[in-house]
Amino acid sequence: MTEVIHNSTVDTLLNRTSIRRFKPDMPTEAEINTLELVAQHAASSQYLNDWSAIRVVDTVLQQKIAEICHQPYVASAPLLYIFVLDEYRNAQIAKRNGVDVYSDEFTLRNSYRFSQAQNDAVLALHAMETAGESMGIGSVILGSIHNDMDEMIKLLHLPEYTYPVLGLALGYPDQSPAIKPRMPREVQFFEDG
Ligand SMILES: Cc1cc2nc3c(=O)[nH]c(=O)nc-3n(C[C@H](O)[C@H](O)[C@H](O)COP(=O)(O)O)c2cc1C
Image 1: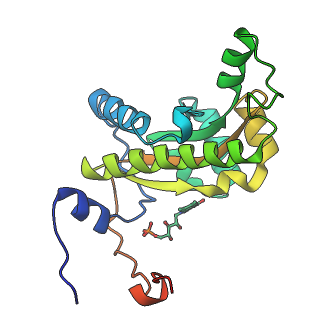
Image 2 (image 1 turned 180 degrees about the horizontal axis):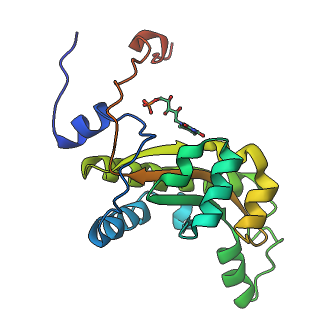
Image 3 (image 1 turned 180 degrees about the vertical axis):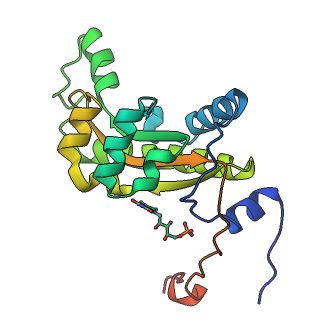
């Protein structure tokens, strides 16, 4: 096997597994602050920062989200964020500056803008996930919030030009799952030509 460079970032990424059982303790304020700051520092297409994240603090709401996910453990995660594609904020700023949000100048008509905003949200979530892992905070990504998108939008009171992209449940791990194997490199990485 070819040589692998080991440093704390690489090892954090190589040792990561999804965590679905959490200790009840809430991560510290400094840890939460760090997670949120790191997410904000992810790259952002055209520097538009068109994502938001909602930290779920209402336990009743968290229970409802767990039901949408069909995954009871989601209700017991100490921290739960829903990352949202958010063109609403930029649309408000544009409107305040007299820009027609349906013009070519703004890009709401353009699916490119929405796909890039979704990428931004995913990158921010991934930065948070990795930072968490490096601090001993485990997590699992929740695509299952999409089981009922309409209900998620309603529960989170999301405005126009927004939708939930992914959830991220975090907390101190109460399990040590084995690292799942990956495919042989040659069936996933190719060279052109
Ligand atoms: C976009 C995305 C959505 C996911 N949604 C869920 C989910 O709804 N529930 C869940 O338990 N795990 C979810 N996962 C976690 C995957 O199941 C997990 O990453 C995969 O099985 C590989 O395991 P590992 O993360 O431990 O390496 C999701 C992962 C990604 C990237």
